[in-house]
Amino acid sequence: MPTYRHGRHEHGQNFLTDPATIAAIVRLVDDTAGPITEIGPGDGALTAPLARLGRPLTAVEIDAGRASALRRRLPDVRVERADFLHYRLPATPHVLVGNLPFSQTTAILRRILHAPSWTDAILLVQWEVARRRAGVGGASMMTAQWWPWFTFEQAGRVPADAFTPRPGVDGGLLVIRRDPAPAIPVTQRRHYQSLVHRVFTGRGRGLAQILARTTFGSAPAARAWLGARGLGARDLPKALGRQDWIELYAARPHAVTRCRDR
Image (cartoon, one colour):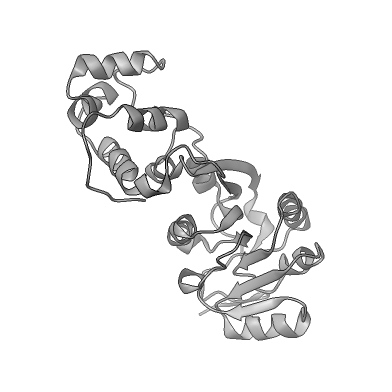
């Protein structure tokens, strides 16, 4: 296994080394409030400037050697040696921040979205993931399934040269904020997400056919609903925006019970 100037690569880390990107992330965090939990601090390039914000900071690091080194270097930071996928997050409001291992992005995003209490998440992910999760060019199923409770924003592109070792793709800053007044009660999340899954995986040559089969029961009703929102019969589910999904859930005449979130 290769060894790099910033340590071994066994956990899939691409260490962030660009000062401008680090400063941009710190500015985004500075616009939030409350304790901070950093995911995968690595060698602490982001941890040290986050600590200077003067807020309680917990760093969750899977690598035992790096965790020990961070404790010695930053004694005011609480360093937890743990796998974030199994780490118990605080039950009180907090902010998440991290340069996510690209190979673990989807799993970590799922863990974050299912976790309670955090208010904001500032995450460095692959560029295309940041765009897709923010709905640029059309929403992904994961984004649509969580839109009633969160907003997703793409906050900038990070060139591959900002990392060591250099990954094969650029990164992107993804900002997720929890809606303090969600459009749909969280108790209805399973039913709502079932609807989104059914529409995204439904059969048809466009939304009119898909919604006729999965939601409205007839093509005229589906076309009328789409037309009122400026959408065409051949548009695909990714064309539906946040408010469209919320209104579709409110208008659904047929109960949906199957669920698979992504």
